[in-house]
Image (tube, rainbow, N blue to C red; front, side, top):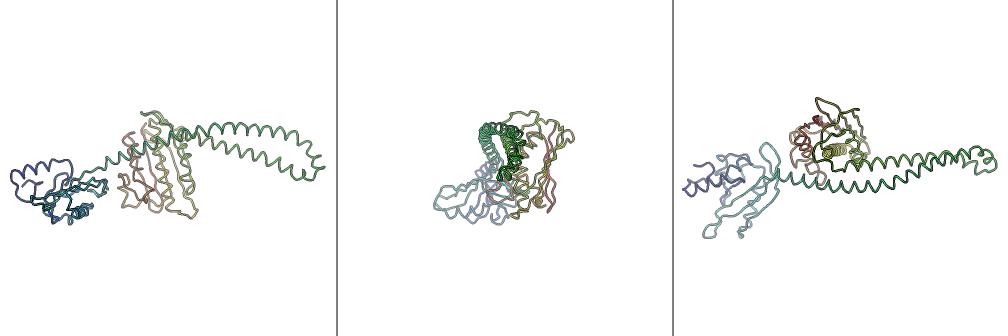
Length: 392
């Protein structure tokens, strides 16, 4: 008997049908009205990890598959009055090896000449990689839109900041000149006016301090605007020498709101780090994802206590390349899920907080686009360090 045929001995017609079913590039399962498997093609074997010898003749619900096909079958049975197929897209299932993946499913009825249901067909297509690419493309387009917006905001901030800064510098210099004129007469003025006796020394001390703090604030606004502009720059479509330290500094400045409430951030950047051939904008996104993940991990530990953890970012020359390490004092990664953290769609975060694409994106950029490496070291209860190596 052909291994991907029905459970009855095939006629020539059945044999042709079995060979055609085996050649279909999508999962194909046939089920009789009692739920026993009558057809199981090669793609079903590959996708669901069960050989045809084990599947044929067995009740579908008893195969122990981690997928929603059986529930879908019951749903189809409830709609037996309709001959329209049912379709469900992006249905999660557990692939062989524990990998979480997505299926597009179509279920249809088979009817005899008298209209009775003689069975069901389940078609399925593993769309995990396609869906991951769609999400990455959507994320890239969103980031590009955000980048254009950020660049425009940075430009709009920079113009008024410049003239405010210039005017404040003028006030600082003018006040220093005014103080030089006032101080020699201050003694006589203080002696003749009780109010001046208390106010003048205070003003001479506090006004320069207020101007100095204003200039420090303006300088910070200028740095943030510059970082936004550089971070949002679309960059080159081909690799060009990039300053990894500068990329890190700009990224943590732009992402400050993500980590400042839960962590102190320490930079340990090697001076004179060689320029690395890279897609600077995409490497900045890698740094951003790692920093945001570190902040979320620490937040899971400190909660609403007001305490803060630590995020440490290091750069080093290493083995013909440069190395970036992002460490956190979060809870660490449980051993059971460590093999899965670079899988598409895998996330331990609650809905709305994570899509399971951040580390997939990092791996794609580092490994596929830069021929680098990315890995991690972790200890439960102590924290995690992600290490990225990019070749020179």
